Amino acid sequence: MQPISRRQAVLLGGLGLAGTMAGSAGLIWTLTSRETPVTGSELAQPREERSAKGQLQVRLEAAPGQILLAGRQTAALGYNGGIPGPTLRVRPGDVLKIGLVNKLTQATNLHVHGLHVSPEGNGDNIFIAVDPGGTFDYEYKLPEDHPPGVYWYHPHHHGMVADQIFAGLFGAIIVEDPEPIEASAERVLVISDTTLDGLGNIPEAPAMERMMGREGELILVNGQSNPQFSARPGQRERWRIINTCVSRYLRLRLDGQQLQLLGMDSGRFPTPKTVDELLLTPGNRADLLVTTTTGESVLRALYQNRGSMPGMMGPGSGTRNPAHQPDGAALATLRVAGEPVAALTAVPSQLGLGDLRSDTVAASRQILLAAGMGMGMGMGMMRFTIDGREFNEARTDTTVAAGTVEEWTLTNTSPMDHPFHLHVWPMQIIEQNGQGTNTAIWQDVVNVPANGRVKVRVAFKDFRGRSAYHCHILDHEDLGMMGAIEVR
Ligand code: C2O
Ligand code: CU
Ligand code: CU
Image (cartoon, rainbow, N blue to C red; front, side):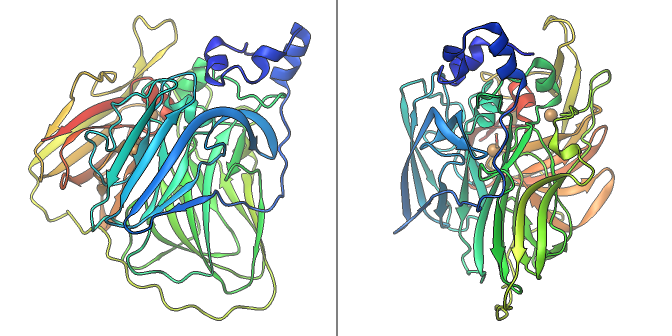
């Protein structure tokens, strides 16, 4: 049993259990019992805010509240009272203005994950802290040639990122296609995981789970547990899938339906790639076309081994981990029935982000991802480092000349995978474990396998300023697995 700590009571603003329970027998019961999720309701879409005349202005209020999650009233955190927060739809060239209001009892801030925008001033600046009761007006100017695709927003205040996302602070951003892709239905599937105790509170993650990277007992789509939806055969649906889980890798299948991947993150393949399985590490997004066939298909998350540390149990290895079932966890159920629909026009070919493989490289860098026993942090506490050190906001770890192309070799010396993320500038994967890639693959979160190596190239164009790279197992990021970069 884990006691409710002050930290958790503070995070949730004392709304839940902490203030209401009396008697230790009751306390033990509520902490060890679990809220049963309500399954099978109709898939909901987060509310949408769309830009008009080149601008979208929204107010995002981060606040604790009684929020609907897995069909239950829970004590969680939400943007504007919902989980996920509103979906923001913008176009290349737009200005996105977000007024962040902090109604939490601790500091927060906002990061627009994957957007190619300035990291300076009131742009995508993660070094800003918004104190409780405070507000901050962010303004992001998207370049005219900003890649279309699926992005997302979440807090990035160092040390609190995993807790705030696990409690419900995240939402989708969509950058529309310059040339529309015809689809019968557009769906946003924001996948998250969390844990709810018997009273609908989110328990604090113990130190051991933080080191492994916590995995929640519930895997939710748009805050719902195994929702259902229907379609007619022959439909081409557009699904925008986001892995907002703090640490969980999502290996997704939708057997019985035809899947074509337009791209991951801000990347695009020239023509859609037929797939039957999809691996999204934390932070990754998929822009997917689903062509429907009569029958019932379940979107499943299968167990993905991401390694472990010696002497530790695997991540989320408890019996309550839903992905440990032989056929994985059911995330959503699609029923296809009725008269077939008429075929849609062909998917226009996609431009993509180009190819840096024959570019001149101005600098080659080694980035070392490591985990090892720590000194002075208490017995059994691991250190999670990049280039041998933990994040220090006052220190710049990497300085890059603006306008150049660099090649980074990401080396992982630990026995667990780390998904490496760079802000602002997308990465092209050049080589994975000694194997060169034969197409241009662009992502902003790249998995670096246990004891493995990945080479990427980055064009540091369009913007200058300070930003960050880090492991997107957000517990690792909070433990210090992050570096600061300055492009100048
Ligand atoms: Cu999605 Cu620096 O994060
Ligand atoms: Cu990011
Ligand atoms: Cu990591």
